[in-house]
Image (cartoon, rainbow, N blue to C red):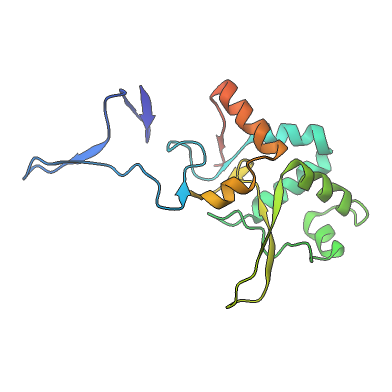
Length: 180
């Protein structure tokens, strides 16, 4: 048995639509579009965060680091987790003001967060656009949207944070809390 959009279905059952005029049964589309995939499975909720990852971060970087992560979660763009305009070229003064921490602590906290895998640096050279360089937040920490680009998901595959989250998910079969 499994849940599909809140309805309990047996393993041999699937959701679908029955056309009364023809008697044709059409299954609901369950597959992700090309180049996209579900973060965990098709039943996870939109606008989610992972409280267990925040507990790990509290142990590793303390309350100031968690505060910075929460601010990043609020800045993350839907479906991409982009933290634009933040990048490696963003000034320390701007980052200190954006995250509300002391200017002398910015580099240390962000280095720890990067090493754990909270965010990644995305660089691309497009001939039609100027050089693009920005940060992307780890989708295993927070994500807003139904499907995620396979590239974004794979970008964080080997990070300490992702390994912790996936291990917790496998051991407990409970992962996300919905942000209301």
